Image (cartoon, rainbow, N blue to C red):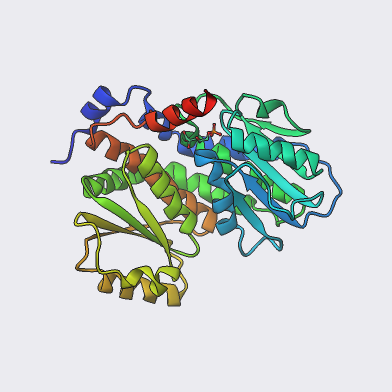
Length: 335
Ligand code: PA5
């Protein structure tokens, strides 16, 4: 018999983070709607895109870069600090994303972007950022923690790319993703419980193909913040040129291979060889995405990590919601 997660959640999950995260499919639906509703009329030619944000609010740039690699004809970068790169100018589209609206690095970037006349879109649920700039998306305020609203921190940007003519219509992918997530909620919950049980007491190392390295990064962030666990990720093929050569791993390593289900044959072959090379260095788990579109596959594996990291928190005797060290650091910085 597996762990009694209901009992653990009753004892530890004070903000009902798990209950909130199970509404992930509905959050995705509402998040897309927020992007669709933004009226943005701007005739300028966009030549690059920057997504500024920290932690849970900063993942969007990475996910969008993966998702839109074959769609966007211009570069997109994630920025996680106080300033923008030199190239940011009036032809740059800047998304400033902060769930609280008060994260100082993101506020600084937003102010700089406005000064440089970039086309700026702010996404916030409150705080100072909510009132800055001409184009703003007001996010719902009900998430127990910013990262738990990941659909809202990522998906509203995609319809905006469509409106600006930067990508073609994505309606089919949206519909496919939403039906898949809704239909798979219970199945994903099961996979997440099993993954958490496998990762208990382990040092997770997540490997994904280049199509999904942002999902691997997301897994790590959620294991850090929700499960209070150190974790690491790398991308295949890049890790085949450095990390695979390592002979010293933590004793309790668990490799998680995130499989997109649609890998190029060359990447699939690399996964098989990598698994073989690493077989003596730790336990191996494979997580397979489902779906036809990359959007559906990406959010399928992200939904798994949202739940798995919470279940792992419970197995670690932790409440998934609080991030006391991040809160302490923010408090010290404000002194
Ligand atoms: O998810 C979290 O709680 C953090 O990673 C925050 O997202 C991060 O500290 C930035 O805060 P905010 O999302 O409010 O800008």
